[in-house]
Amino acid sequence: MKPLEGLLVLDFSQFLAGPFAATRLADLGARVIKIERPGTGDICRQLYISNLSLDGDSTLFHSINRNKLSFAADLKNPDDLARVKRLIGRADVLVQNFRPGVMERIGLGFDTCAALNPRLVYGQVTGYGNSGPWVDKPGQDLLAQSLSGLVWLNGNADQPPMPFGLAVADLAASAHLVQGVLACLVRRGVTGAGGLVEVSLLESILDLQFEVTTTFLNDGGREPQRSSVNNGHAYLGAPYGIYRTADGFLALAMGSIPRLGELLGLSALAAYTDPQTWFTKRDEIKQLLADHLVSNNTIHWLSLLEPADYWCADVLSWPRLWETDAFKALDFVQEVARDDGPTMRTTRCPITIDGNRFKSPRGAPRVGQHTDQIAREFGLP
Image 1 (tube, helix red, strand yellow):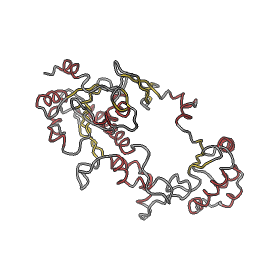
Image 2 (cartoon, rainbow, N blue to C red):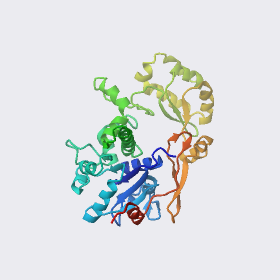
Image 3 (cartoon, one colour):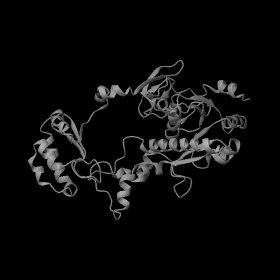
Image 4 (cartoon, rainbow, N blue to C red):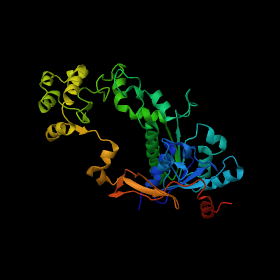
């Protein structure tokens, strides 16, 4: 039995943060009904991160809406709205990520839904919270990254601000929403009452930076200084970073610089005995390493460093990673499909509970695919 079996989740959200949170709840056993506008459905169905689509919908949509049912409803239509309210009366969790005020105008704000169902856990994602001067800004991942300061941590010192290569604000907000929903469900088990869970892209991406922002807040407001050579972390000294080798790349994490010099046969590093210099002379040390490491291939350097337990790693591409025994041991890829549609490979839930890894073969639904089924089951007019 999966931990959330028996719970009903209504997913009103679109794009990434909200839908992915609902998918994670589905992974853990909840039954998730996606509420979509008739015809077009979730805008993400046509939001492509490449030119690859499957059975008429983007692979992005498929990846974050697998294992759900779809109920088509025009929320501006009084009859459809009434049907949805009846579903809310039976639900355990509601997830939405409209801009602040939209659900209230529709008639499905938290207060209204809590009156319909006092046990309901109501989760919402916004871009920048429900108040303040940024409340009406579009809650989009790149924009949130840009406003959060994160983009000044990536790349080298002489490079412009650089966004993260994933929708990191959406993904962090999604995880935080799931955490809040689960916490409210635990509390409901004690008190019997539901609650309101609110997260925002900005707060989540700020929380993601807690390690470096704490340093900033307690260091007199001194801004992080990116390394000019192979920057890996604005607040960490040498050797932290990724270095080119004769045939690829080598990642070096924290460790003693003199010891690293001994292992690599780089005598110049013996002079840096004071750990303070590993930061104050960071670029100087990194340049010595960069010039030295290109003289041989990655496996040679790993053969010197790994037996000494010096923190290092090969830098793998996806095709190379996929072929490793370590990746295969995770059994991390699953196949999903619509009832009569093509099969798609995607990742599974990363959480293991009681030794169980959770997979489900059910793919993302078509718009309104389960409307009639759900209406019959819940006695909707």
